[in-house]
Length: 476
Image (cartoon, one colour):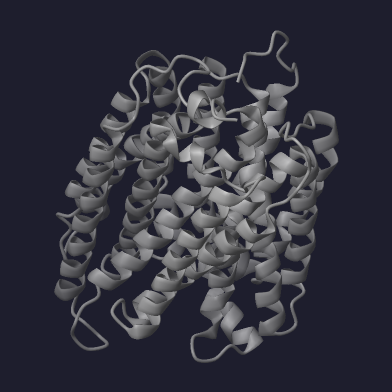
């Protein structure tokens, strides 16, 4: 992607708008957790059905990310961003006014669809707005920092809103934000699309990869309750793998593939997305375990935990800003390795938690170390996975980037929800619970170590426009 001789003077305002959209999408993925008990009581869910209020969003969000990003390349990035924003506005209103449990689940499906359009499209607009190099790295650092704040803001905002105004307001708060985003998009965002020959759409590829990702996310989300070795889980995972193989076959024969297989010849793109996958597993899994330890062992309320854990996203923001400054000079490999080393050390410190511990004794230092590692590694892996991507494939690369981290997060939560579960009765002792949490932190250390090894695949210094471009466009 060649540098523009005349950078868009609106680009930093556009970045603020795009970050606001990303903040809203991440907030909505997490904020429902604290409202589930109220939703269950008022809408009459039974048999654990209220969990689908969260799972419906994650399923459609994860399953449609690649398709959402590629659609932006073909149909126009600003256009698709505005369509996604309008759908998010409508679905948020429908969620807030939901009169039955079924209505709420349908509305959450629509929210997931809109998020799968908005998130990768916003990132692809960022890529096409900022030239590769220092400015784009700085923009990615800000993007990463805002995402980290969004995850914690859900814990800070969700509890008070549900307690004071009702669960409906966790959805209604999206409405004014979405209205501002929709109104300012034509003013601040440039329209762009990939310079594809013809406008044909790879329907077979879209159907197979969407079904494959949806089955994968569904299997992972349900595995902790069903069991990883149960026939149903194995069947879903097997069908997902089969559909991925079919997708690869379809793409190899398509004249206008949804995801040209040549993009996976880029070491930077593949390595960056693998690091993001493993980082998502470590970060989401660790966050879940810290939350459960603080509330079940230390006796924290959700609001108190949200306030006390704010040190991690603050330090993640610091790591993001520092990481983008260093990666410009050294390349993504050393920054990603250092970041993953910090996340591993942070989890090692957290693995020392005790049944009679306290916040400062057991959690503070681990969160303080984990945060900057998360921010730095995320920026470095994103820079690598998006480096040198041709503009016509910015949406596709952004969809892969977002999907890697989100699906990794789903895997991390599912795995840690299984390995750390006590094998005793319904009311395990604090010692038994704490031992399970230690096991979960140990698993997060393993995820971080694996990501550190994968980071060795990343390139050193990146020469602008030269890392991934041969793999993405040389064989046109």
